[in-house]
Amino acid sequence: MLALALLAGGTAIRPEWRTPLERAGIRFISAVELHAMLRAGEPLTLVDARDEVHYRRERLPGAISVPADDAPLRFVDIERPKRLLYPERLPADRSRLLVFYCGGPN
Image 1: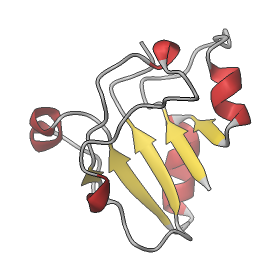
Image 2 (image 1 turned 180 degrees about the horizontal axis):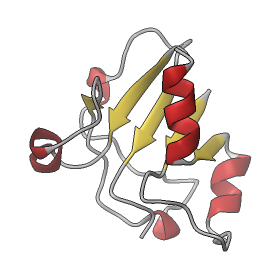
Image 3 (image 1 turned 90 degrees about the horizontal axis):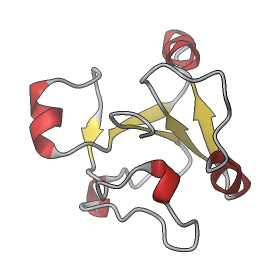
Image 4 (image 1 turned 180 degrees about the vertical axis):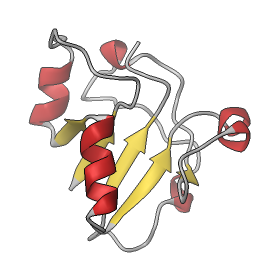
């Protein structure tokens, strides 16, 4: 299972680019939902998809750094998704939920 958490606050209008990503199995969650999951102790791995500079400056506690191509989500082609720069940093245990976060959907 894969989730992408957009912690930049959510939007009342559902952008059209989300539909193909959701059909591919990506679930979008809010910061409030993520906070509840963390409080409940759900087994998940936080993945900071921003560049290393932003990761070193500030990150969510326990997050690992796996930068992705710097392209707005609205330009992501589901046939050619964003490339992870260091996929080997992802945990070997694929049964845990992966929650990716970045600077926002723009």
